[in-house]
Image (cartoon, rainbow, N blue to C red; front, side, top):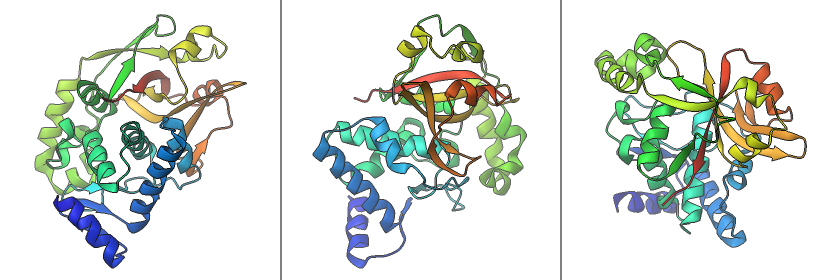
Length: 286
């Protein structure tokens, strides 16, 4: 109720920025979200690609969630990185599938996606590693990780996670609050050793593979696995099948915008030596 009251007050005064307890957003964000949800209802379109394409050409900006010293639900639809693009799109998709059209609905859904068990309880409650995000949202019945058939899911990723605890100065919250590092380290230890089937790069290269087309659908979340020490997933995007093959819709740090990459995905992944393959996640919702 207090969030709804804050939203109504915000709309009444036309403030450029609102922070209602632990929520932060701008008027532009709320109007954008409501317009998209109304359009989805009017056109009866609740696909992930419908929403993902509404973000095309928005600028890529890193660290948009690291605004405050305390953890808040930061909503920024104007500047995105690969993770916030996925979170915003999935939140919109879930709202639309349940015929929810208010900004308060979106706020609640985004909170549910971003935090462990949907509960915001400080910086460590945010799901910083995407493997953790997948496991938590799968438990909540919001997504499912696709790990069959074999082929193309011929490889197994065994996690060895420690990047954040080994590089605390790269994270504003950990640098400012060293006591949080031990909590993050415990979370990393819980992830370490878990295994997941994925499609290795060599299988992705077989772009005309019937099995690949069956395994990866339009709008699936593509999670690029990596050989970078201490990490699990290095990049995220959405699968787009075109007549010439698979493409990636993503917030590109190279091109500094959200784009539907014109390059075939097999060429995209081939050009990046740190990517080892892909895990596939599908939005299901309850």
